[in-house]
Image (cartoon, rainbow, N blue to C red; front, top):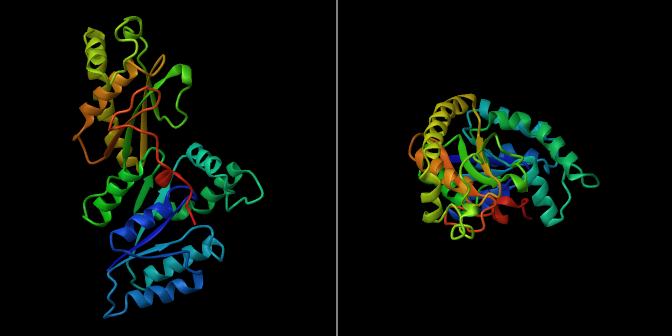
Length: 303
């Protein structure tokens, strides 16, 4: 029997995660009344039960204060019921954007500001997040990427990547990404923008990449940056960090930053047991590795 409790921030992708697991053969129940949780556990763990994969969705919309939910789960663990906790999360800025896109009110502040609801919900869920076996940050995940991660962990039983590293290119003139953990400025490199035939292209085009990397300082920076990040990542994993966003910026986010972000992504691939993504925020072109987070994994939990 594999029993997964799915919880997390409203708008973090909990409903999407439940739907994905249901498609993979899990028996799913969402927002069961708190006083029925223990009875539900007894039924699914009963000898002879035909159900071997179960998902129980729980969040702050429960019919009783969430502290009672945590107490029930703690009691069930003491009784010998084994379950895993999957916590779905996203950055505050991402959650605010998703709520604005869907024009929904936050369940913790139905008549107030979304920001206040998010802050209150984080405090309510702080303890269960700390106890979670898996924390997935969907701030930069596409639906297909979330599906791949869930299938890898909950269907194929592969090792969970506790840290997701996102390498992001951006343009300083469009603002520094607010969710960036590490920011690197590559405006010291020669700018392809002033080469007429390269101006309309991006760092995803080989002509631009070849130009940027033809300078000695580019290769030296690439090596030093890769060495630094390779040194830091194991300590972030040890600390328990779930999401690391490395932002590399140039003036417009089209040429130099895209090239160097691609280089770092390639240098880090296959180095360790962490997830790795690349995202070009301000480039005019999109590749198969890039894109804007889709509403399914990115949007608030749908009814």
